[in-house]
Every structure is written in structure tokens, then in C-alpha cells.
Image 1: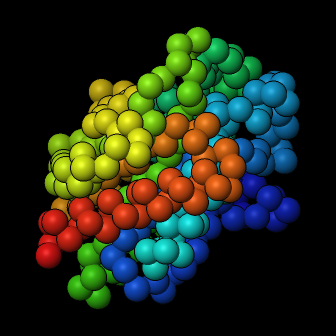
Image 2: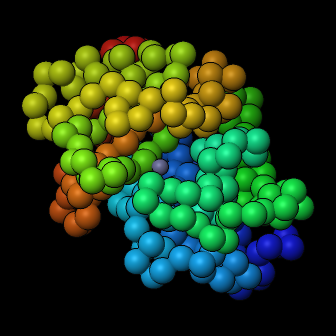
Length: 255
Ligand SMILES: [Zn+2]
């Protein structure tokens, strides 16, 4: 355990389906809204701590359905991105944001270098190493993984409704995103868009770059509008939609 996390908090990283058979490696950086006990509430209301600023509602549930249906490994972060956003490098202001959409985060407003380092070492470093070790093992076993990171976004942002329902995001390597979008173009079940509602210009492709592109691995980031996955039925429908097109996209790339 680190100085930040107690035995009661448990480990920062969780791994499910570790010996899964498919090449797909699901990653969920914003799976949880839990805060370590020592962090208190960061000065936030209960409403803020349950909102999308703390986590990606529904994303972990969709990952778990996909892990089962695709026979895929799943790695996820067990603490809120308000403590440390694992899709950001330590030198990014967004790693420990002082403001998120319409909320000020008092507990992140004046962090010292030592406090930033403690959070990085407790939350980010084990996550980065856990993911990196999984990839190294698979590459060494000649089973290079396909990196799929799963996120959700709020339907209303700064008061404006968002039309996009599923975002397929990529950085400089668009192979898997292109194949997914080509396949999904024949399916009008959801409004699916490239690099929306975020894209590489927003700094959201850190995991893709660090673990996918730097290792030459196929990679994609999938963003689902969170109102579509608020219920178990919705989670099943979206997991079906994504699993279907992801499987077909991989067939297009490596028949
Ligand atoms: Zn996210």
C-alpha cells in the first residue's frame, strides 16, 4: 500500500478475465467514483461526487459485458479520476483537475508537488505498470493485444445537448477506428462519429499513445453517451453494438 491508500481502500488496479482467449484488451480508466478514505470529499457535494465529473457512469458495466461476450481481458482503475485521471500523464493539468465542467474541485485547487507525486505514485503508476506488464507478457507470447479503451460522456455539456451517441476516437494510428467506422456506417442504430465529442486535440488519447501507438498495437477509444447506458438493458444493447462492430472491424483488418 502507498501513503495515500489504506488496506481498507484496497488496490488501485483491478484485472478481470486475465487468461481470456481473444486478443482484445479492454481498458477502463474512469470506471469508479470511489475516493480513498484519506481524501475525504475533496470539498465536493454528494451530487458532484456521483456525477460524470467523478467517473464514466456505465462504462465499467459495458466493459464487463464485452469481456464476457468477446472473451477479452479487462483492466480498470478502482478510484475516481478526481484523485488522478489515468488517461492523463502526470505533467498534464488534467491529471488532477482543479475545475471539471461546471464544478470547482476545492481539494485539487492548491496541490503541492509532494501531494501530486503521492497521487501519481498511488493511482497512476500502478495502473500504467499493470497495463504495460499485461501488454509485455502478451507480446512476449506472440499474442500482441488490441487496445480498446472504454469511456462514457455526459449528454449535456455546459448546458448544450450532444447529438452524438457513440464516439470512435483515435490519434495518429486510425486503423481500428477506420475499420470500426466503415462497419458501423452500414448500421443506423446509433449516431456514431469519429473523434467526437472529444478528440486528440483535447488530450484524451494518452492511453492510446502510451500503450497502443508506442507498441505498434491496434488501438481505439470508444465513448458512449451515458444516458444510453444508465440501465442494464441499455448496457446490454450498447455492448452488443460495440462488440459486433469491433469483431467485424478486426476481421476487416486481419481476415
Ligand atoms: Zn472517460
